[in-house]
Amino acid sequence: MRKKLYYILLAIMLCWIPTLYSCQSDSPAAPGGTAGGGGGGGLDTTGAILIDHNCTDIGAIPQAAIEKAKSDLVIAYGHTSHGSQLITGMEGLIGFISDLYAFNEDGSGGALQLRDRPFSGASDLGNPDRIAWAAATRDYLQFHAEVNVVIWAWCYQVATADEEDINTYLDLMNGLETDYPAVRFVYMTGYLDGTRTTSNLHQRNAQIRDYCRAQNKILYDFADIESYDPDGNYFADKRADDNCDYDSDGDGYEDANWALEWQSAHPGEWYDCPSAHSQPLNANLKAYAAWWLWARLAGWEAN
Image 1 (cartoon, rainbow, N blue to C red):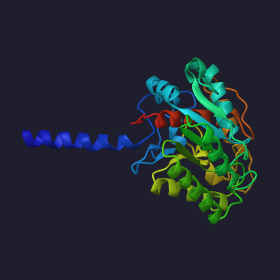
Image 2 (spheres, rainbow, N blue to C red):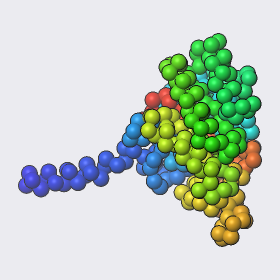
Image 3 (tube, helix red, strand yellow):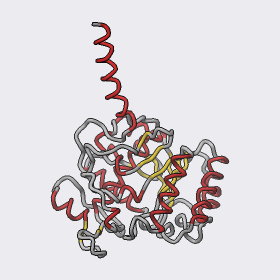
Image 4 (cartoon, rainbow, N blue to C red):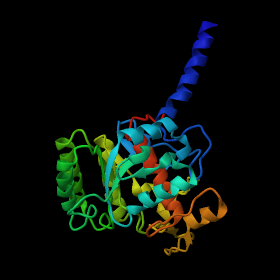
């Protein structure tokens, strides 16, 4: 009898262990979220924090984790138009769900303190060049020691980068992490550009992902989030671009749009908001993933 009980308990443990490494919860999907699907995002087995399309179930984040992020984090975010999708998505989320997700520049009223484009001397990770953002970050942190999260977004520059350009980005980020150990620096991939998965853009994004996994970094995977619809259907291999257009019939031309298709099929499950170069659903997903990131940085384990 004891031997039989042992094997039953062992089987239960083996079935339970894999759930520790997924962004998903057992709760039903929130609007725009994914109830099922693969793992890979959130708490990675290597210790990295990888925020990807698996991290868009806003309903899976406990309110306590949201509140802790609001009380603990002081975020500085540098970006241009594509990166604004996180901000406009987060703004729309307040009205769509509640002011639990409120944010502003100074944290007043118990909101998340998120300083939108506070840096001088650089606009994004490639403007005016590929290194100015690092100096701009140092200049800002010199006078704002209260900041404990720094995140920068790309514009088009990943698609035009070579391997050495991305190594420069990774080295500069690593240097900042070394010099400012109390600050969490968030890496990011570049947006989709409608090219094949063998293109330079996809190779450079993979270079960033591989580095973050191997070195236990924090990654907001911008490209991966816009590669999937909320039901987990994959479009990056169909020449998907930043507008969510894709090639539906394999003839080499984009002739459909996964975001518009999903929005049409799911009225009431998404919210309208500005989404630079894209569709509202894309900004919705970027906002859900952003809150997953903030909660993780504030200590939520996401198991």
